[in-house]
Every structure is written in structure tokens, then in C-alpha cells.
Length: 103
Picture 1 (cartoon, rainbow, N blue to C red):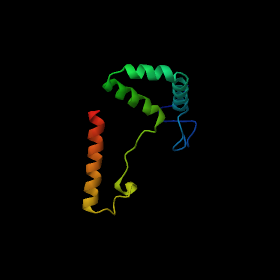
Picture 2: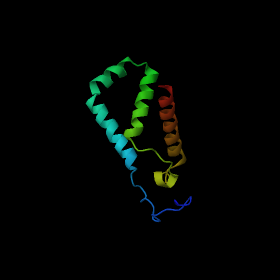
Picture 3: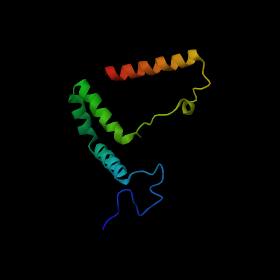
Picture 4: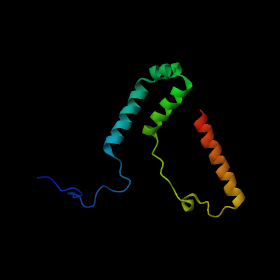
């Protein structure tokens, strides 16, 4: 007889920020594969159309970069900025987002 839903043998659970071993192993395997086959990856990448190149790159990045989480204004340190400075930050973010969407 197993545990009921929501019940665990480890009441403390996994530590906050602890890495998922499976994800860590997968990232390592992908890194080793890419390093070992880099010339072939570069050649294949060169044959892709621009849209597929961006998709390929974006798909690989998820294994090398941590996932982004939403953060509050306080965490960004924006609470002391003037309206004009906030407008400049917002305009820059919009431009960066637009530029990344048009690639």
C-alpha cells in the first residue's frame, strides 16, 4: 500500500533551490553531445533558414540558462526612479522585446 496523495516520507521536502537531478543530468548530456559534435552542429546550423536557426538556438538555451521568474518592482530596485527614468526603462524593454520577436 503506497502513500496517499499529498503524503510524503520526507515532510521537509526538497530544499528550496535544489536542482532537479534529472534536469541536471540532461543538461550535462546535451552539453557533452554538443561539445563532442560541434563541427557537425555548426554545419547543420548553417544550412537552416533564419527562423529555424532562432528556434534551434532558443530551444538549446533552455538547457544552459536558468528559467526566468517574474520579479517585483522592489526586487528590480526601480522604486526610486523618476517617471521619466521608468519610461526610458519601459521603452528599452519594449524595443528589446520587439527586436527579439522580429528575428
